[in-house]
Structure formats: C-alpha cells, structure tokens
Image (cartoon, rainbow over all chains, first blue to last red; front, side, top):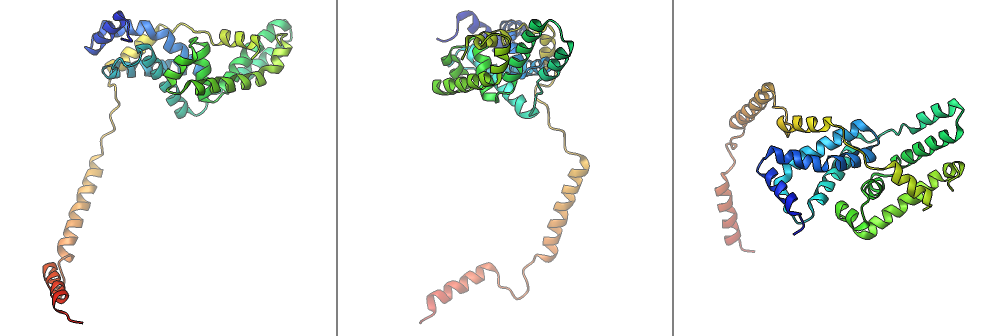
Length: 187
Length: 89
C-alpha cells in the first residue's frame, strides 16, 4: 500500500467531510503547495491564488483519490495543474528583476553586495523566462528536491523527458547567467 | 552545469512558508459555492426563443402542406415499385 497509515486515515476522514481532517491535511501540505506556486509564478499574489485553487480542488476531488499513487504525488499533480492552468490564463508574468536591477545599479556603492543582489535577481528572472514545462521541472527539482523519478511521476512523463527538460533548462540558465556569474566571481 | 549555478538555484528556489491567511481563503472558497454556476439565461432570451418556435411551427402549418397536385409519399413509392416491376425494355 502506498499511503502511510496516518495519512490514509486522514484522507478517509476528509472523504467523510471531516473539517478537522481538512485542516490537518492543509497544514501538512500548505508550505509545499505554496512554495511550488510561488517559485513557479514568481509573485506572491499569484502564488496565493494558485495555492487556494489547489486546496479547493483537492478538497472537492478527494473522493476521486484511489490510492494508486502516493497521496503526495496526487497533491503535487494538483498544484502543477493549477500552475499551468493559471499560466495559460494569464499568458504573461512579468519578472520585476530588471526594474530592481536598474534601481540597484543607480545606487553605486557596496559593489559586492550589489553583485550579490544582481545575481539573485538575475537567477529568478532567468527561471521566470523558461518555458512552463522547463520551469516546472526546475521548481520540482530545486524547491522540492525531487528525484527524477518522482518528477516524472508528478508530471506524467518518462524519466528521459525529465532528464531532457532539466538538461535544456540548465543549459538555458547557464547561457543567460554566464556573464553575471563571471562578474560576481563564481565562474 | 557549474556548481555556483546549482547552489544559486537551490538557494533562490528554496521552499518558503505559506502565509497564515491562506487557510482563511481556502475555507472561504469551500464554504461558498465551490463551482461557479453559469449565469441563468435571461427571460427575454427565453421569450424570443419561444416566439421563434411558434413562428416556425405556424409557418410550416400555413405553407408547408403538400401541394394539391403532388402525390402523397406512399403513392409515389407505389408508383415507383409499379414501374420497376411492370416496365419492359
């Protein structure tokens, strides 16, 4: 059986409409769901909407969960779908890194601190510019620390596809961030 | 991929804590209608549709009867079978 006993009982309680069960399940997954939503969307307001949407769907569809996969995988699938749905609806999320970089550049002192900031913002902006499929693979890998096999299970694709997406994402990020990496003394 | 980028990705994409107000929003959505209902069709639209149906049925009743000279369908098929059977080449 895939589920841990306590979690299975929790899911059963939620199926019966137990409010405390819902709350407990929410507490178990809220940080993971919100983290994926935030790292994928890049902004807090969108992340809140995605997380809310995910939990509402999760609670209304919990009777459909049959225990064929791990419950955690099922939750991740829900948040991935909510992220991709929202991305399709919104079309464009603007990374704010460039504006912030312009402000930071204008201040002119504490060069190393600025470079550190710049690197941080550039990394986020570069991730934001990846296609949704590549970005989701990167978020699951680095935010949730998932192994390739688990990413494949969540995304419903093969191990080879996951490896290819991560490889393409790494290459794109490396290319975009090579200059700033050299400037900040990393490369 | 260089190590610094691997480290930077892990650092920049690290998990975060969900804001406390998330539960309030989820609970609010669950207590409200979970599935948004489609807005009901307006009475004017329903009346217009009913009027269209009445007008169409009326028009068929007034003008749609078979012309005086035209044979009824069963007679046509009878004639066709008659010609089929009895016409010699």
